Length: 227
Image 1 (tube, rainbow, N blue to C red):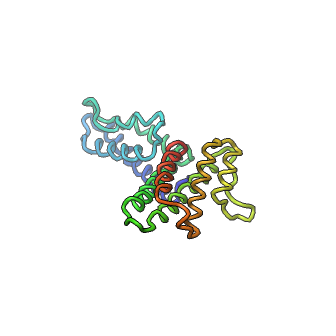
Image 2 (spheres, helix red, strand yellow; image 1 turned 60 degrees about the horizontal axis):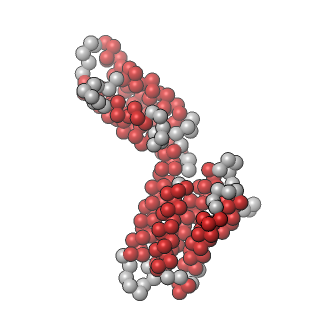
Image 3 (cartoon, one colour; image 1 turned 135 degrees about the vertical axis):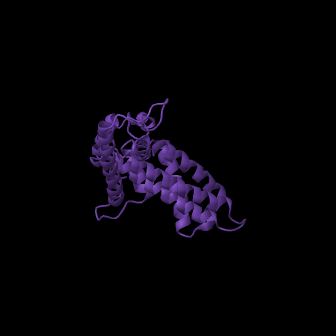
């Protein structure tokens, strides 16, 4: 998932602001043998907040974030860290830190799955609260499969020739054919698609809450493995 253009612009502007602020801090350090520590720590704290958001969990520079504050009694070192910040800004703008988009997508999916579970568990006995839960869980699965298609190299088409998006079953077939998912996963996904379709078409008596509960648990496991 690519970051929305407006969000990427805001984050780029934040990089630029901190770089400009860091240049002033470095200049004050060079001009004074005993510069005030408050501006240095303030700059370091803001840098740490931005980098914690931006850097992927497995990025080699993520371990350096702690150094933008007080660590082992030593203050942050702007002259050394400012060039690093400039380099990371360039990587971000060039699209080499796109993990943020995937993390946002994963958090959105987790939130929707939480809503689906609450619909199922907090509803009234005898009501059809499992129906919207099934529809919501199915929508999360469909979106996840589109993301998987987009991540492949080359990407797997997730739309028909007329531009209409593929539905769940064709997406499952395409991913299985490309060996992105295995036969057992494809079968499980197809069973969830069946439940979702029954819910979406008003066939409320063709599936029951226990199936939806199993679906929600299974979707969460699928997202953990693939997203």
